[in-house]
Image 1 (cartoon, rainbow, N blue to C red):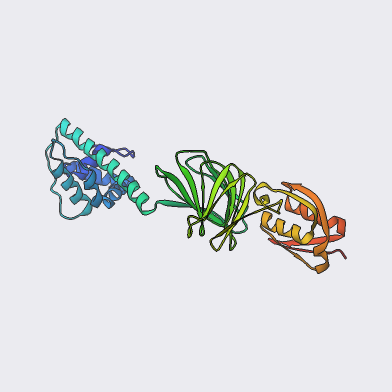
Image 2 (image 1 turned 120 degrees about the vertical axis):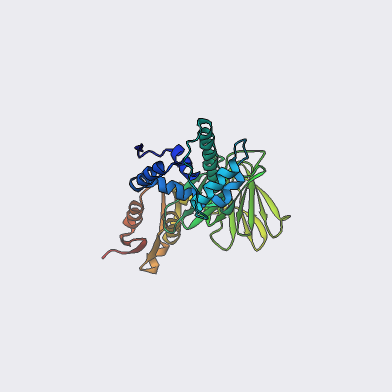
Length: 333
């Protein structure tokens, strides 16, 4: 008597097939089913890939699980021919076989996840060149915003004692408070340690710069761990060749790449262009050197770049041409 199988995977049938306990007629029907429902073959093939590891997750039970598992391995790996039994298994044996199959499936899944995590413990979040800033929320609730051409390397799961990441480029950190687990950022040869605060790290140049917006951070040299500074709100410090220095910030627009807010007070257009380049990831050039020294006093708050360029040019009878990320400012004809 033949049995019709649906296209929904029947794990009891798969278990029976893998353990070699189908009758000849049942085997014939199942193989026909695999031809029209390839999911069965895919499931068997996928399980076979991890057989070399699965023994670690099989527990010995009262029924002969060792022999059953041996049959499964032989069937999936093709190490030797499996002898099919013609006897009908008892309901208890069917139940135990299904239980063994579930153990195998969960074990393989757990093993695959564990192996993958061990081989690739870190993840990387990237903000590409000429891309606007991108933000990521980590598992602890900390929010990191990357500037263009930057990346953050962080663990798939923080350990029990600390939250450690690595920065390449520039980023703004808004760290979730956790007095029992410090947040540590490695940037080139610098290390910044916090418990919960917000600050900017720029390691995109030769030096490493830190600007604290809120809270308190510890800024130190990896090469000289005893060389460290404690920075509070408004402090700005740099690390250059293992030398730490706290200085008074002179740039009102240091965070404009993130905030999109800019203030210019009688600022030369050449300096305005530097801020716009960093904020909007463009390259502004002046056709006439005399244009660079024209002064501009204004503020911008999340304005589109074209509106800003028009505002810059209008008072001085200038025009601009924009091709992609390249901008040329020149005198109007």
